[in-house]
Length: 246
Image 1: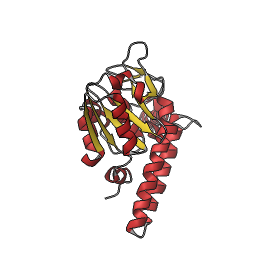
Image 2: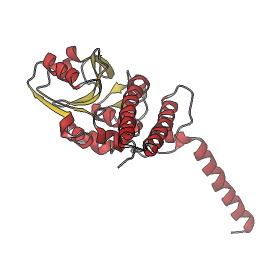
Image 3: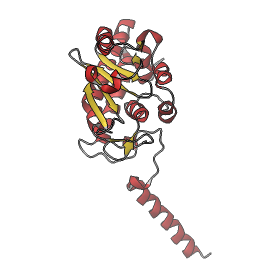
Image 4: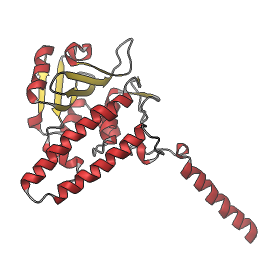
């Protein structure tokens, strides 16, 4: 091969690399990496929101590390938990609403493709910066998923419990975000101090998409004989893991 041909080959390889770098849609996304690390940020887009959330997380990590007393560190953890829940409820969930359900759905892009209930839970948490194995936990039982994220003191189990009693238990546990596991389903419960909502990717006939509904009237919750919940926003260890703190 002549030097001229060799130079052309090198330049072609560099040009191809630049094209692939710019056009990130040509890349295969590692399934355990957040979408925003590979997309250009369109204002208001899901990727832009996640980029902003990562920036917020960096700020919170700095505040936690610079806290000069146990009390200040506790306050930093409490504030982080409160703001994480607020951002999930107001900035992350809305992007996922109406994304279609499929039992084998694994999409990582809200509104495009389809997503199963377990993947919805683990994808949202991963995108929020929670250290979680998205695929492994999505395929695990919902109780195992919950136990991997929160301490036993923040977990409650229910067998053939009336729906109103189930909802009252969440209210008694306080405002925040919960992961919910059912007989064959999973999702999130969110309590804002006024009403408990159930956010999930449902397979229910005539719906089959990600929805936000009243927990007390959710047929998915009502017909499940077994329910388990874990309050992740109330778990100090969970928030510490989010902050990458020991």
